[in-house]
Length: 165
Image 1 (tube, rainbow, N blue to C red):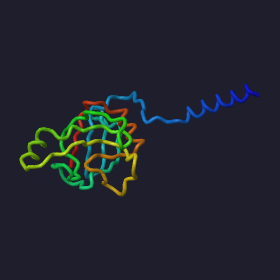
Image 2: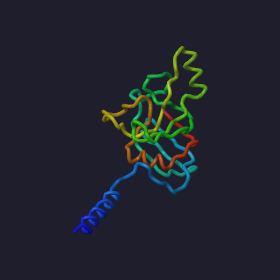
Image 3: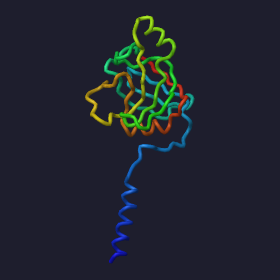
Image 4: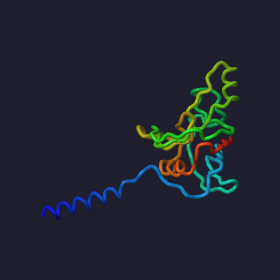
């Protein structure tokens, strides 16, 4: 009887382990050489040179029109930046950092007597609260969690990201 109980427990443990899903995926396809974000169309494209590998819909900052200029303005930057960091423990499932602000962004904000802000990411949905409505971030690009898992696996640090109006 003890052997049977042990056997059932072992099979159950293996079955449960197989059911667990990790947010970390593997990607073995072509390298993502750039990302293009079209804010007005709400479309993000992961590219291998000139070929679209994947595209995603997304949500933006609570003030989606225009280039981010100052801390707290709720806008998403426009221009060319770099994916410069990864956060596997983000408050928003997973996140990839965008190199905003650049030198021009800093100089403009400083000339206006303000801070440019920062901490702009591509990220998933919040872990602690449910996002309400469209365009709820503080300037980031938000996708669904499953999509963020794909993006996180596909995009390397150093990838160029162009964010267009």
